[in-house]
Image (cartoon, rainbow, N blue to C red; front, top):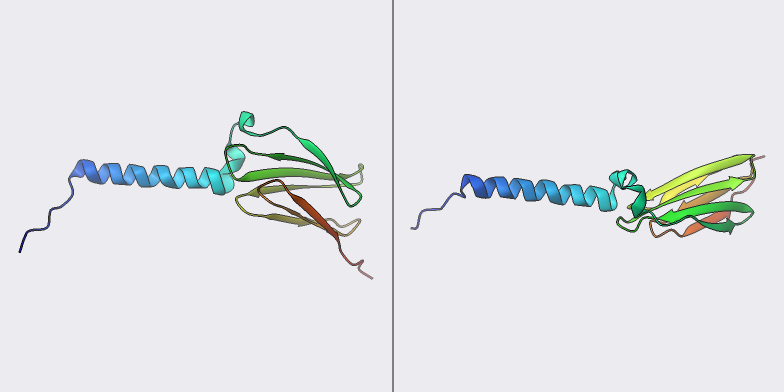
Length: 115
């Protein structure tokens, strides 16, 4: 029976470094680290009206991420950050629920008023 060969120390170090690098790339592309990407990787802000709210949305060109600032005049605002997965939020004054996808699509729906 042939003897099993143990990987050399250099091979083990390279495997560990490759694993750490891969985890770091995944965190930047999909996870919360997308917020740490340089400003130059973000596209320009675009304006959109959702229901009766004004929204400013930008998408990251490197990572799977988008950010949105949603306002109803100066009365109320909400910020959503979709880093790798959809972000959800709702407002109180005018009950509205928002969903932002990492591709920059913003969806709003009115919630029933609380009595």
